[in-house]
Length: 553
Image 1 (tube, rainbow, N blue to C red):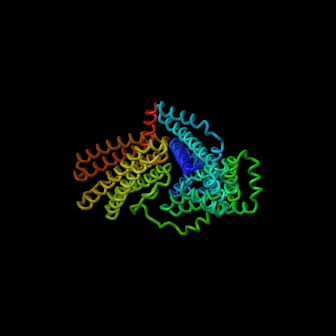
Image 2 (image 1 turned 60 degrees about the vertical axis):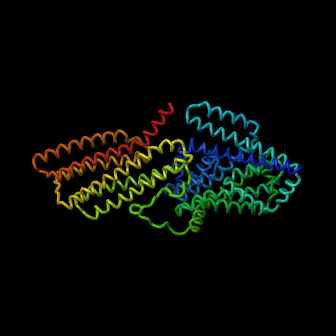
Image 3 (image 1 turned 30 degrees about the vertical axis):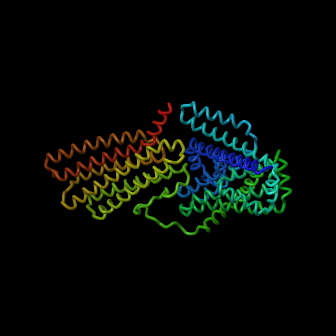
C-alpha cells in the first residue's frame, strides 16, 4: 500500500476522532445544561454517607458521560465547604464505575443508525420553538455525531489492517509498562478515559491490538483520567487538593493491584472476560467495567485510609483568613471556575456572606447612632469597603461565567444574581449613611429622644427579620415565606408612615430639634428602602423562573 493511501486513512482516523470528541463534548455539555442543576442538587442532598455517595456518583457520571466533570464538580463542592472529604470519596468511587457506561454504549454497534439519530436531533432543533426541547435535541445531535465519528474511525482502522507497517508497529507493543504509560499519556492529553478506551475498543475490534495490551492501556487510562481534577484543584483550598488526590490515589492503588493480578494470571482473566463477551469490542468494554467494579469493591472499605493518605500528602490547614475584614472571596475563585455546573452555587454562597456583612453593618451603624462609639463608626466604613470589593469581584465573576456553558436553570437565574449583588450593595450604602448620621451627632451634639430611639429599634427589628427571610428565600429558592415577606414589607411601609407622622407631631410640640428630626426622618426612610432591597432579593430567583416559564409558553 502506498503512502498516499496510508495518509488518507490517517486523515480519516483524525477526522473520525474529531467528530467523536466533538460529539462526546456536545452530548456531555448539553446534558449538563438540561439537567445539571437538578443533578447538582441530588449530589448535594444524597451524599450524606459514602455508600449513598457512591451510588449517586455512578448514576451522575453515567448520565453526564464524564467522570472528569463529576470529579471536578466534587472538587468544587469540597472547595466551597458543601461536602467533606469522606462524602467526596464515595462520589469519586462511584464516578469511576459510571464512566464505563460510555464504552459499553460504544461496544454496541449503533454506527449504522448514527445518521438517522443525527437527522432526528437536527430536525427537532430546527423546527421546535421551545428552548428546553432544543437543548435536549443537542444531546441527540451529540449522540449521533459521536457514533458517526466512531463509524469513520472504524472504517479507517479496517483499512489499516492491510498496512504491514501499522500492524507490525502495534504488534510490537508488548511491554506492559509501556502500554500502561501509553494509556496514561493519551488520557492525560485527551482528558477523557472514555474516549481513550473507545479508541482501544475499535482497535481491538480490528485486531490491531492484542487483548493483554488492551487491558494494560485501560489501566493507564485510569490514572490519566485524574489529570482534570488535579489541574482544577491547583488553585483551590487544601481540601480541594485532597479531594483530587483521593481520585488519584484510588486509581493508582487500584491500577497497581490489577497490574499485579494480570502479571500473575493474565490467561485466566482473559478467559473469564471472553466468556461473557461476544467479540473483542465487547471484551474491552466489559474489561473496563469489571476492572472498575473490582477496584471499588476492594478499596471501598479502605476509603477512610485513602482520605487520610490524601490528607498526609497535603498537610496542614489553610491559612486562617478573617473574611469579614479581608478583601478576599471565600467560595469562588478569581482565577478558575472548577466546573460550570457549580459556578452559580459558589456565587450564591458568596452573596449570602456579602448579605450577612451588609446586615451586620447596618446593625452596627444603628448601634453607633445611639452610642456614638467612634470605633463602631470607623468599622462601618471599613466593612463597607469590603462590601464594595465583593460587589465588584462577584460582578466580574458573573460576567466571566456568563460566557461558559451553564445549566439552563442557572442561566435563568444569572440576570437575577446581578440584581441581587446590587441590592446587597445598596443595603451596605444605607448602613454607611447611618454611620454618617452617627458621626454628625457625635460632632454636633444633636440629641435623639428616648421615644425616637425606641421607635427606630422597633423598625430595625422588622427590617432585620425581612432581610433574614429574604436571604433564606434567595439562597434556597424557597418561596414558602413569600406571603410572610409580602406582609412584613407592607408593615414596614406602614411603620415608616407612622413614624414620620409621629416625628412631625414631636416637632410641632417642640419636643424635637429640626436637626434631630432631619436625622430621624432620613434614617426611617433609609430603613424602608433597605426593606425594599431585601424584598427584591427575596423575589429575585423566583421572578426569574416565572419570566422563563412565561417565555416558554
